[in-house]
Length: 487
Image 1 (cartoon, one colour):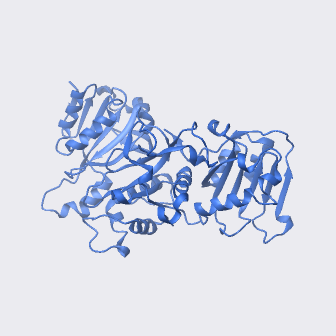
Image 2 (cartoon, rainbow, N blue to C red):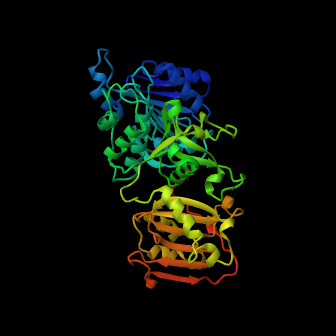
Image 3 (cartoon, one colour):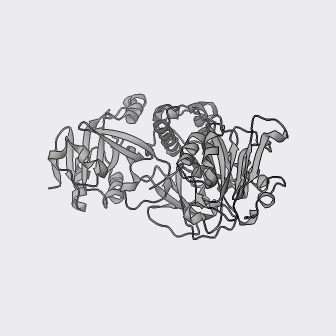
């Protein structure tokens, strides 16, 4: 029998067949809707051997919406939820109090809400434990506690809309906020009902039940939470739009993407690329085939592919081209935004004093492939400290005064980029003014290096330290990869 234990507090099920999964639906029948049961089975049945169900679980996100909304309805909604834990291994009864034996096989958990509509609540799955998933994504570490054992999950948070307090845009912002609050201590944990109340200044009529959010309302929610958001619309940026979107995702910044024609919003948290594609624009975005998204109508880590490419794996019916707006949650001191850094890079590479054609005898501007991203100087210095750079340049980067965040443009060649190798980089001060032609901190070509003292003003000659590097060949080294983690 698949049901090993089933009492008032918890249930233990082994899941070896479709019939076993039907028992999961039976045990959770009061809470788990038929549609959501089908989603979980289709998503997890190839990887899950055991489900442990906590009944009467107090979930902080559902309790928030229950206290502020569901408790006020005529129907008597329960104040507790079910929490289902999924394992890739068979967990025998004797191991319930020593679950650390199965920690490496822990897929994660899903909250099942008694809301009757869209019952899947807060969910954290480790995508590396699910075979159908792929891509590079933003990840944070989460903990759950079961029978006294602490179980760790590395992933990105997910929640479905309940169609009352939260709709798709609320769910997308919640996922973004919960990722930041879990990964960075500077951001507080926030719950669904409070999120729904953060858009009052540009809203018309009541906020609950929600009738949906505009891009401006999402931006207001980001601002009221503590971000300094940028909003990008396709009509405003035209051919640059999708490239700018890619730069932010490559920076490890999840964004809320708007699909206005589909009347929908999703969270973009990573991407997939094909290095066999031609790099016609000499930009890393040329290799992009799709984005990894959390869409509240589906379980997490879906792919949204470019419409000219075949669908692969766990794939959405939407396409990248359906995205016509996105909102980026930026930190206060990220003054330079993506559209400005792209222009600064191009101007610098063709500049007479410091341009690559003028300063390097080994490469030309037309041969370079650019990879642009934003990152923290702390992370960048940590990665470069243990990396092997030519001429021990990592020492210069470690000692260099930097702001909290920097823009980096890595330089590579067509034969090297697929091997994740670069030949140089330009580092920019993310707090600089976009009109400042000396906004860069360092320029490195294969045979040239320059450092710029940002404390100097104007064209003072002593602000620059530069010299030729003693090499007659290009020396490749590893690109920076701390922003996104491979599934």
